[in-house]
Length: 220
Image 1: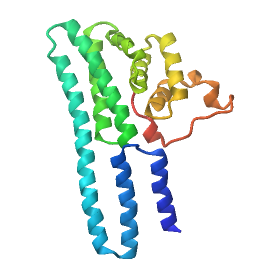
Image 2: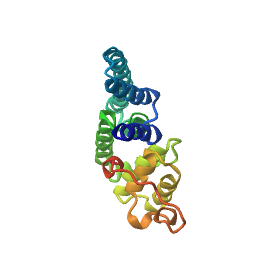
Image 3: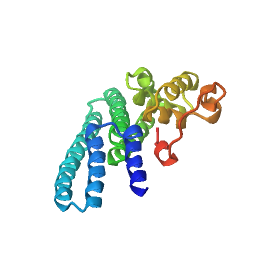
């Protein structure tokens, strides 16, 4: 019975968890390892262990590349020759960090890359606020970005400062309604309870599937 529950939990991760094939391979290998341990097959356990080690290295390399991309975007902004170019580059860096954050979550699950992306976004927004009164208004350029995670993050940070509420709320509502991945959760937590639509409250016969709050409460 316990084995069945463990297998069911792993299958649940396949269905609802990260989508990167390397992460899915890791989950499959863990399931194989558990079965090998149950059989007492030491040789197979060692072989699976080697595969897991190689798999972990691939995942770490992929995430390290994402973090390097964020750092490069921020460094480009910091070395801009003029204040206007610095603000423009900070906006670009924010988009890079927001897209990386949501991509990392959807592909790899929770991890260091997400935490770094959130920290970078806060640093960027603080720099924008310091550049001029309501300096973060430059993020409005990202409200029509092709990536839903970028739109959601930009909207959340504008809404947090009570900026462009009339424009931002409908955008976040649409993302919340249409995107079941991390972008939808960013929009969900950015909106106030009174901003959620009937589709979410159940009045329209639909409701958002619940997830642990620690996963959903990622900063915009």
